[in-house]
Length: 111
Image (cartoon, rainbow, N blue to C red):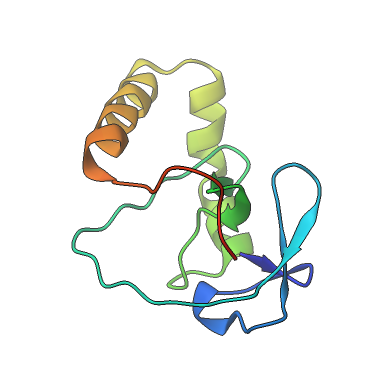
């Protein structure tokens, strides 16, 4: 997530930090809770960011530095923009799996 304007792992967010929101605003963290869930999902977007409950987050993991990962995935993004069939197929498949794999809370995000 973008914490006080800097990309950090969610585990580094503290009370009082300010997160960047998709509407261009920011929100102060007023509560933190942890949830243990099964499964894993690592979506990749063309830009490298993803919006989760209104909060802008990176679609990259901590395994590879985000700038390096973005550079390494440049050929995939290029092929995607060309409409390479297998990548558009993966996009449609991942959207369907995302809808069935994730159970996200409804309503406004609480920070």
